[in-house]
Image (cartoon, rainbow over all chains, first blue to last red; front, side):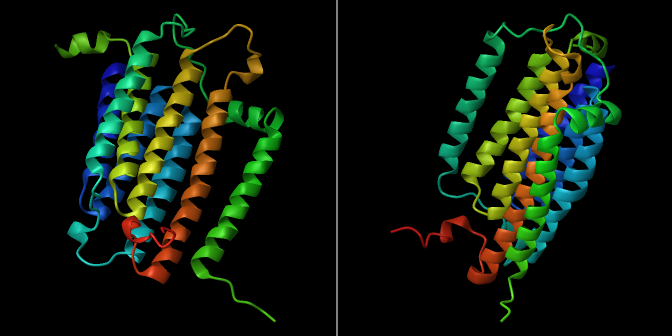
Length: 167
Length: 117
């Protein structure tokens, strides 16, 4: 049963990602992006990462996708149906991406040296376990992330709004 | 293949890694091929998502006896930090897009070539 759900959501995430990079309408690209994020959140649930799935839905689908849609609406010019064109070198980009995928797939299938568990380790990644780790072992990176978010917020406001010089 | 056969297939580490590789390469193609700055930012988000899938999949399927039991969720914490950095990156990136759009009235990266000689 889990396998069927896995393939449904994996195909959903990949098809939505395909829509993001091939859609000619950038508004459709942004909405496909939200769909792809939601599919990835379902994959997290299948990997017992409950807390990360919730964070994915809140931050990516709820935050980043909406922010992208706002930016699209603020910068839209001309015909929306032609708002997301390919550049002249898209063929080379496709070739390089396909070669990259073939290389990664070859590495995945030829490397037998993963220390794979006989059965997958299914302790849940609940908020309690992760918070214990974040507040003891990874406290300094956690605080640094808080500083980073504050600086990014202030920087985004200054960049988008401009600074009024006071004398 | 019938559905009952399909449900007997085991979804292992390599399948998750393959899904992540597909998402990553689609994002890579978007970065190379797209002309709109916001589309490039969206493709970068796809690539960061693929990396997060890898972190969580390795955390679930790999195990080393020597690892302290308190560290077993390190992959989840790494994915969490990637999400934090991605959120900051997209906030600053979209602010830059809006600032550039205000000055140049375009989001086409092919026209942003005033540093080119």
